[in-house]
Length: 198
Image 1 (cartoon, rainbow, N blue to C red):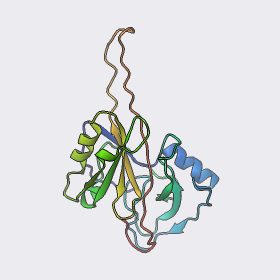
Image 2: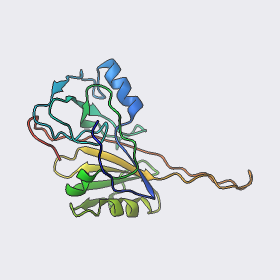
Image 3: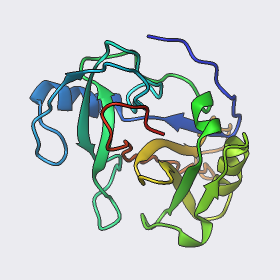
Image 4: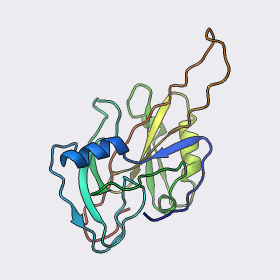
């Protein structure tokens, strides 16, 4: 697995496709749309992988699968395509935004605690390095639970961002506060098998 430099964030957490749900998909060979998983060997590299949030390398065994990145059901919980390693990989284990996303236009689509798209807070981010700051700003707004970052042209899922859960403070049982931070995810992919997708 290739190592990647990350843009560190102190207030939010970044995640790709959920590892446990990916493991189940690989085990059954059926994706979230009911389609059989069809692995192929990447000839040229550059596919945007949502299992580890890296770009693929030539020779990688990949699969394009239908994926629902949401932890809930409902009219806003779409299913769409993502590219993954066909076999288990190291996944994504960092809080930073992988650098390739800083150089690609991205759509930040936030969801409220009512599990609906927060349309007033949707942002298109130019490839100018500002994505981490935009995410931190959007997730600081009242009522925003999670944000899915997507490819602007294809509308496909890139990764999920959510507010970092703060350590529990030493409060008495009578006054203990909960921190209702959840997550969500969704898909990405360009329809071209031969070239890098954004």
